[in-house]
Image 1 (tube, rainbow over the protein chains, first blue to last red):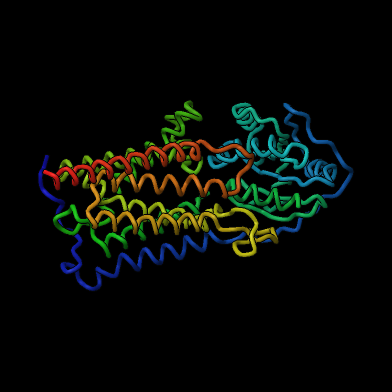
Image 2: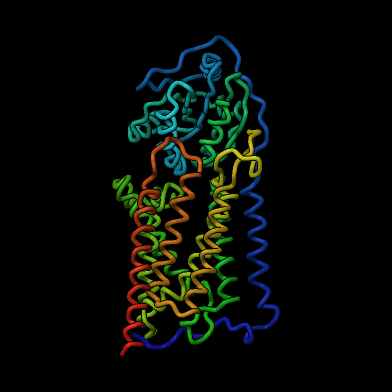
Amino acid sequence: MSGQPPEDRTSPSSRSPFRRWVTPIVVLALAVVVGIAALREPSTVTFEASGPPLPLPAEGQFPAVTQQEFEGILVGQLGTPVIVNVWASWCAPCRTEMPLLQRAAETYGDQVVILGVASNDSPEAARKFLDEFGLTYPNVFDVSGKVRVDLGVTAYPTTYVFGADGRLQATVTGGISEQRLAAVIEGALR
Amino acid sequence: MIDYGLLMSVIVTLAASSLAMRLRPPRTYNSPVSALDIMLLPGLVGLVVGRLSTLAIDDPRAIGQVSDMLVIRSGVEFWPGVAAAAIVIAWSGHRAQVSPIERVADLAPFAMVAYGTYEAACLFRDGCYGPTSPVGLTPNGLSTTMLPVGLLMGASALAAAAFVRRQSLMGWPPGAVVSSAVALIGLILSVGSIWLLKVGGELSRQHRTSIVVAVAASVLTGSILLLRSRRRVEQVHA
């Protein structure tokens, strides 16, 4: 035990006026930069699925799809809101979302479709990742990388909310919070 | 991808609690000490213990995998983290020959300020939303306005911090100060979690734990204050 109170290293009176203002100014500047980055909304992507409708992959399947097939799956779900979650096995924040999305799939059942799209990844690693979480909602593998390009993915994970009319309603870049996910699903169902 | 929302929350939390310490310096330090010096170690220990607790419960295989452990947004068990931080603060008091419980009671309002600011910073984490309401926030892609429950929880925690600080200055026993701080935060978490939007209707683990902690801490606060008043009466009679 030292028995001594901590030393006074930051007494305002012992510091020059310049040094006294450096920390608050640096913190403020950092907060402004990070705050702008945090509040920035992703640029609007115009994406509308077209083509012949295709069914969702069955539970346990993990098909490699082309851009046309992906669009076909979306067209096949017209009339039901679809939450598309683009993920990769190397993306740590994607781990956060998987149980949340699984819970959403179980909670909303047939009312909402949750569709995972593994992209920019190896099929083996993505499959292993899926098995690890025991997900039951449908997932596909973006084999050509074109799905990612068409959706304008700039970060992993990214979540897209398509309304029942097939129109893209919202994009959430980065990890989606439980509150935001619940809000966008409730909004899409309204 | 950098989680800017979480980073911003940490910056705002540290800045607010530093400001609070500058305006109302803690009383168990003989000389002014940097707020960062006071908060950094307990905060880090609390974060690590909270994160490890979550992993131990939800995903024990991830313990030891650095990339998984660092994704703190995946979950940090709140109350084990708080307990660990309190133990570190008590230990710092013991080292400085200050009563450990007094040191914890002294810093409790600042911890509440930090918690309240973190909750209010839900604006940056997209985590404020509650039920639809005429006033509030409109998430991107929605036309509905939602009650900013996270902001209200933050404001409540700041008000609770002021109350606890006041009770401390008015001479409440340190044990009662600490337990009332715990009870108030538990209450805020319990009530706020009812209104925060969630996927599925079940109570979360944190919600259930907070209810238990709030009740237990309230009983403890009441017992301490009751004992104190009895002692006073006895002293008067003696």
